Image 1 (cartoon, helix red, strand yellow):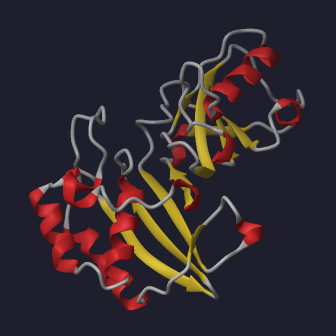
Image 2: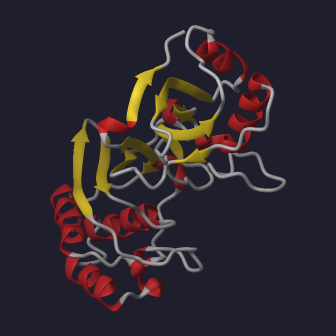
Image 3: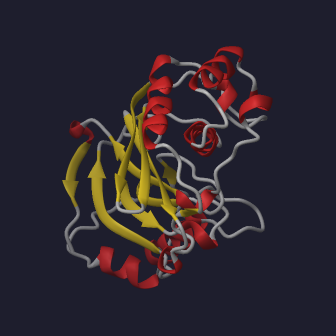
Length: 253
């Protein structure tokens, strides 16, 4: 049987999602706990990757297990063994051909910025001590909807075959002293959102124009864009969407 685990994690103590040699990762910790509880080696496949320090409020990880996990208190047991900064929020039996990465139709990220010092949000936001022009930020967000090729807004040496991304939503919200950037697409490139946010903040501070952003995207120049990189701690993978029909049943303890 194939299962999807819906998970959330605080990325502060992890070198990203994906398993790496000699590094603590969210996937590595989850795989270890699942393997111990199920009595066999489990190697999950995630719906996407996150970089070092990036957080996640919704990620899906698939794994195969020849047995029905219903009514076995499995969700409670998993969360009891997982570190305090990782949680499995739900567990689903899915279609045998379902794939956590390739079947995802939309992915959403949020980037949070606090305008000032916020000791209680340390590690969860970018603490920014100046006040960008909110209207300019919104204008910069709309520029992204004009393009499909985001080579300029990706890190070099990314293991991808294409830099084409279908951006469906791109906008800012403001609540009190917190600015949040919201973006949804079918896929994202390595470092893409942090580079986007860094460039938009330059626009918001009047140090860059939206026309410069357009030129950078059109020329596919990483050198122009990548020097403006927002820190990891404000970024959250916030939602991953799939066709409803792949979910067969929710596993209830």
